[in-house]
Image (cartoon, helix red, strand yellow):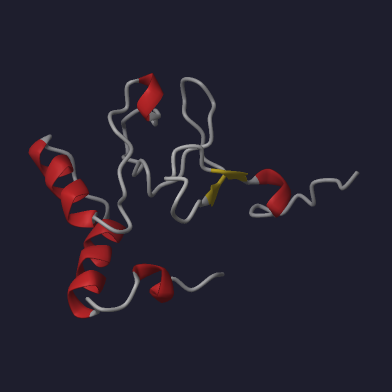
Length: 110
């Protein structure tokens, strides 16, 4: 059996997000719900400083699609008085400047 390499981002220590839509792209993540431990990516639940990182099943609200609909996420966060993560602002600008391209085409793997 393969051993975990110890690298921070290796395929052995990442899991498929359990809340990504089954008909779309499923992201791999190391993040987990703080209540139940299910894998939860930043697209489905943007992480916010000072708040618990919980999945939709544990009371975190509906799963969001911050990659394809970042403006809706920004509006929800602004209405609740939370500072919007900078990467969401960049996603909105990318969709404005490149409306015909898919946002997945703009993501460059590391």
